[in-house]
Length: 520
Image (cartoon, rainbow, N blue to C red):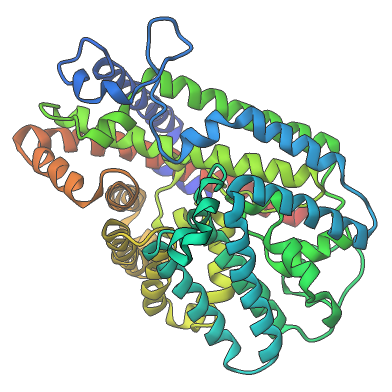
């Protein structure tokens, strides 16, 4: 939504109003956390329904909720990953050719340690993409090939469960006993993105190059030399250890440019500050997992008998934990890449609770993926010229890329349906003429629209990444009762306070940016 200058918001609400909004917002969060802590007790009647999912905690006598299937493997292996990161960084060299070879060898060791003999399947599938890409060259059918091949692999990998060796030949069945720590086909989704990046960068390249330090956008858009699109560089990119498991996503052009010309923005001080930021979010996550058992409650649907406020607390804190776990994992791998001299995008650009616009939310949530989608899918489909139509195929792909499940497909279609009203309202309502017509009430009407946005985003994300369609239906049935409607009114008031604080911070940020640009 388009925000006006800071003085307009001060005039509408006043300094006291902002202080009150900040206090209400802060007290609301504390209240939801207290409620979640109260039902996260062994004495609660529903405790037996999810007790088996809890683990021994670091607070004596209190279990810890380490039941998230995505975060638990990462959390349990943090010491090992730190050790691997240190070893990897110790082998870094400055010469481009030696650096690529060293990175490739270490990445091969890393991939085969993760997936065992299944690493051979990864090498086979990505090699097919390389050799077909080189054979087709500048053929107009190349973009169609890479998209059909990439999306086809997503479906085939899921359908055949990673192609067990016994299904290929009984003589190879023994190899299934050495499949490493993770299922390779789950993480192959990121490899699919890298395949598209290499193939399309090769398709678009024009044999021009630039030397020296460049901005991130220049590194992405500037083509390499023809000889740089070789099999060695391709494998080094596809298997690059720091970013292999979860990103942040980086294009082929960008990585090769940085390996040849390390960016001057990465310093020891910058790495140390970023490591501290990562430690802070890890500690925050540990405290929340110890205090709130909402993941286990969500997975077992143990909210029977919960009040509307308790159900809302389960949903809200689950979303907060999703944001935290992804922030922790992405920041770790970004920190690893930084230590190796590679600059990537910060995937979580702002806190989940500081987002009231669906459009801006998706720009800041998994930011590197958003940029990948813009470069390789959104712009080729026509970009902003067909925005309202393009968001449907884009989010359909996003849903299928995450996992081939009905709940994620529903999530992928809910997002565009929720974004379209914001587009229309922003275009016709967030204008100078409307500000003049409604006067001081304009900010409050914008805030109410932002609250509706938040409710819609929470609904979509709970469906896609937390409780699913059935769980959301059960939650809504309880929320839409008499007590639930009263509760929704109180939550709306709390979220209005959040939004007013966010409006003020955004307006301050824009004013600061404008003043900074005027001084330059």
